[in-house]
Image (tube, rainbow, N blue to C red; front, top):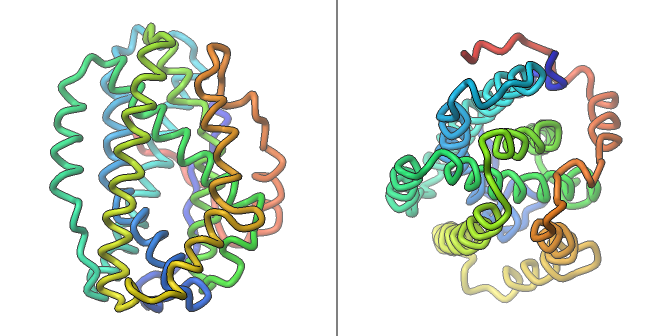
Length: 274
């Protein structure tokens, strides 16, 4: 039996949201928007990479169930972020790195299946780090519009819940240490470069790119007390350990707190993923 739950979130993005939906702060709003823009493509790539693993490589029935529900969760995330991104498009925020990302995804699909899953493991580690921060430091998005705060927290919960699945599939597929860490280095460069370019463009469209307050906010978000940089440095370095596993950092308590406090925000659904 899978340890994961596919959930339907009670949130309506059809009503739209403000351009600076995160406390009126241009930098933080546009940084999160840049992440959302990449999610539908990225989540489909994660799904495809696990589907590419020959079924006879995954012999553990529990892991097989988790793969199915991983796909169900990622498909749900993809659906909601498509709605989110449609509102960004209405706000005249263009996804300027889309063609470059699609080209990279096509290149990944041509790789050995172990490398495909290693790429997914690397991205999943970044999403797990960010998810942990969102739930551990609620002040990061406490001043968000309610619908988007709910969406980002729910997404964080499920990213943490399935953070070990791709890693376990990678090991089941015969993936080793050097392939894993070398792809992590590659993904790190690509992930942060793309995020910078898209955030930069979003801020330009927002009219906030050259304002001192924008970059003061960026400095606080990254390097202030409980800043994102300090939160991530340890987990990034841990990925290079030969004995690394995502669940060596057990943060299930964060999931339980949010799920218990927000039981009216979601309902469990059956995964329809094959």
